[in-house]
Image (cartoon, rainbow, N blue to C red; front, side, top):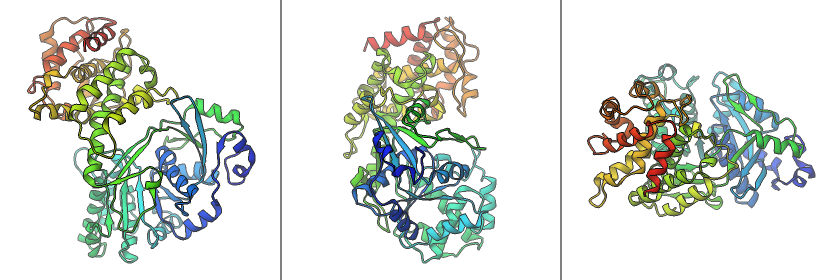
Length: 540
């Protein structure tokens, strides 16, 4: 069993329990290449597990006849060494909470392209695609930083600056190449399109628009593009930038899944590690749960994605769903488990959900402290969303997600995941921040995490974080067994007052003393983390 066009037609795939679609793939490819409808930028795991599967489901049920064109602009070897050798096929392994494993051959990708302006053949084909009347939407999973045109200091990135000056002929930056393709669509007759970010960041459509608008302004200002290009980009009846909320966990392909596929007889499963250190396999594993909510703003029409579970609504509702997920029903729970998972020595998120104390912690954060301030978006019930998170998604033993992965960039996550709830309590005339117990316990746990010493007193390496070194500086002189509370408070108070990290000044809002008190308990001795966690959650 080899993952290619000819092999997947053999009966043995279905005999081994694989779902193999029944639509005519050759006909689909021909129609998609001739009249492309949907282009996706970002050939990674989330795309293969989610967007490509949505397209396949539409093809299979007959609500679409055209598939997808996927474009990779960061690591070209993903296309060269994984997609094309497998005829643009992949295997999706859905890991269900009930222990079942569902295996599907994904056949919806009609064409794979490389976003390389230095390769005339590749870039000409992309310009041709973007000039097609049939093209309705371009979706993106290129990560939040993919839309950035400046560095951390606010300075224009060198490649972007060069692209601004040189125009759309041969841009070097990722976002500059996308802008050049949009310019090709403009030149072809100001044809309509929706540019849809499906990256996991707030107001993602605005981030994509800001990048495209910056290029349009630069190129029209310096005469590198037709003056009408800027008006085209800014006219949402021609080019729209809908907001979206996406939610699906797709961890790195797991060795245990590799073994399952090997036993089935699937060959050539070994992952490819590219020269850019991208780790990519012929399969992707993902959880069953998935949500995609998109602002319904498509000037050239769109595929019937609502028939396969995508929710189309207005911008305000997308925003409410995003806030529900990020500020209350999922992300805060993940961060709490990440912090305490690391300092308690856990290596899997699912294992943490067998820990009664940690289950009580996340339930208190979600149901008790978070839900009172969440805004019901109407299209998804917050209580049902969090039920699924707590009872199905996080405990899924087949999801190889780790607290160490989720602990990355915690300093960037705290102001949204907890700060917004604190602000809502402050603004309320019925709620009091002093009633918050578990959110301050997470803050104290993060201080303990910054020490890089677990509950057994052994050192561990904290996950990457742009502010890690700075934050660790506030706890560098604090040792296990420290009893001088005033000394500890003096050391950490400047950090607790930093609203850029916590969302608010914790001292000003009357929460710093609670955090420091918890922190003192957490550093009392070996075993103090477990003792403190159990004591707090048991008293609630």
